[in-house]
Length: 193
Image 1: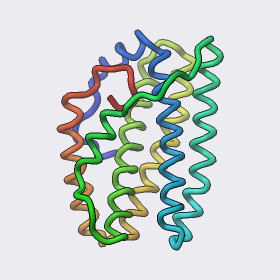
Image 2 (image 1 turned 120 degrees about the horizontal axis):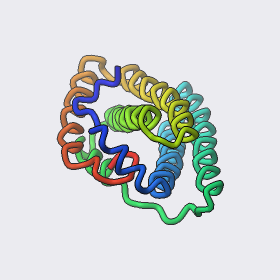
Image 3 (image 1 turned 180 degrees about the horizontal axis):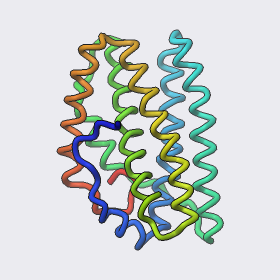
């Protein structure tokens, strides 16, 4: 369903389980960044009423997810800590060239967002099925469904605002590029890395 070309090695969960604190902190910041992305889409494309409506709802949802993750951190006696660089996203953002029309820029941002949500969904599924902490397994199962909905929403908007054939070609090329990035990742207790 997600279209990812290279699945995460299931052994990634073993890395995560050795440092739950790190994955939760990284995850909290991912939720915060997702809310920031939605806000930036509202600011950048206020004329797209349907997008603004959906992004407004998404900001609320992502911040509620942030709070849920933060609650897990606090419950375990930890603190949020500092934000880490997301190597995955930094590499992903190199794919599309800078410039182009406002619509092209919007489509590219929507495709990036769709892919990040798809990879998060895949990682949450792995955690929900394989992590030994039952409370976190259930937590990630619920979030997996949410991420899948976000993925389809972003991809749907990209197809709505761009030429469907061109968007689908860009999406496939982005998926191929992402698979190359993923070959070097999956060795850290981070949501994407």
